[in-house]
Length: 395
Image (cartoon, rainbow, N blue to C red; front, top):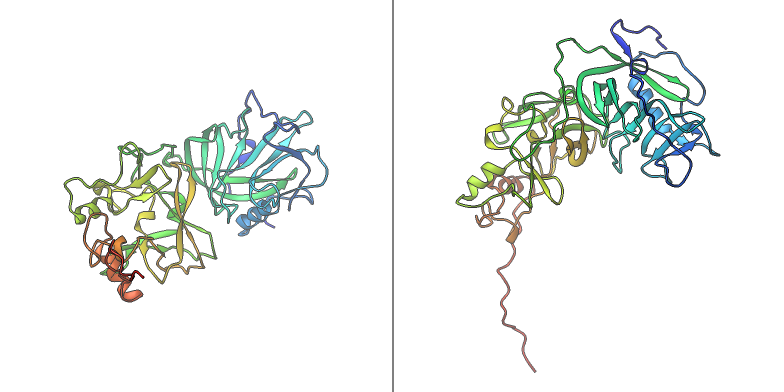
């Protein structure tokens, strides 16, 4: 274990400004949390600062190890998204004898049924409403548990933060504490801004997690630009990239319009459109297409395959844009390997239309059907519409 720290390291647990109010947690049924004895890898006692290569691994093991111990009335507030299994940590922190929050909490930013890390964590002091609030040193920690944003957060919302990295960790009073590198004086400032159908913020400002995880390069004559792994991806459900853009409320201003447009024009204007939820879609208008015009997230560069997929879309939280989509791995991916997923367009029969299936509005693009024929085989065709007249012989 290495106790020597880089000179520019900042101990996150010592920088926060004390707020005038704290979160009151009780053991009653109306409480948002549970006062409990907490079991974890920090249960054996305090440790020295560790700045070795296993910092992220130790943090990951701790998060996955947190459980509510036997009995009640302990000195911790612990909550899980899945209360019975206790596999998806919601938050963990210390409380005093009166039930008030003490110091910094770990707060997950969303539930995922396969990963406790996908949506990242806020780390900082808690206000009276149970949200992370600090004027200086709250952290958003990305799923790699190394990349982070540090700065001002108000009620879980990023007000102004700069890129940093976690350089050390230790156990202290049952919780993990971290130290982060001091941001460069000229580091860019990240802020929360929820995109609308007419505006997004910082379209050329790169995401710090994506910068160390993926890169964009030419994927071949037929595929154009594609997304490639910048480092080895160890397994399933590891975050690769985010997918944001302009967000449309489909009940007010539909992202897909057909008026006075050919099928080719529709696909050109909406080729990056993707459903976010039942009411919202995301899209990149044509003037934002290309890495020089939009690189706030890189998910729209991922290419399609029917057979060679190694990734998929999932909902995810992002500190700049809120609830958007992400691309996660479905298997190990080697450094330099292209990231591919299945777009999920319908194919063949009445569902088709962009090419050999018909060409009517709403059809799929030509390249999609051509790739199907290359990777899978002939496109299945539905018979013509059944006649209303019966061919059965009457007795």
